[in-house]
Length: 218
Image (cartoon, rainbow, N blue to C red; front, side, top):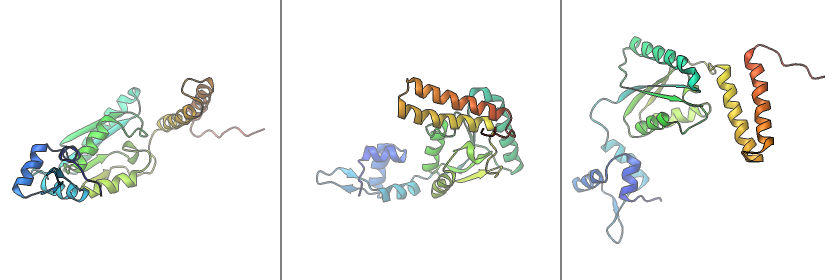
């Protein structure tokens, strides 16, 4: 069983060390004690503490929007306008907006991480997104289940499985190829650059005309 120090547990929970000490004194969350009288916390105490520390005010409804590159900022503005109009039509008040510019394959996006932190602290009730892949390219069901465990619903406005632009899908594929090419050949090798360039050029032709059939092999 993993045990957390008071500082580790405070960081995990998103509260101050003094708050944990106060809860201990008040009997709200009494930690274990080591032979040297140090406080130690368990994983079960984490979920108990989420209930104790739940904010008294109404939990937030937020918007999350994302595009893959700075060149898509007009698309980002359209996305935000669409989501705000949708929320207004449902009578929902938006408390906060999270925006990222980056690939859906990158789970270290700054505001995506901030939002996930707020969800796990029990601060968010609803996350509104235009499409599933605005959050993640893969693993949406896992994320949806995880958020639900903290009392948060992901509201997907358009439930189509794949509504992302072909160019963004191509950029994600290039990111995957680049990652494995550098693992195989090293980041500065000619072979890695050549492979990435070849894939980029091939995809450029495909995304120019998504309906175009690939050339038959001779």
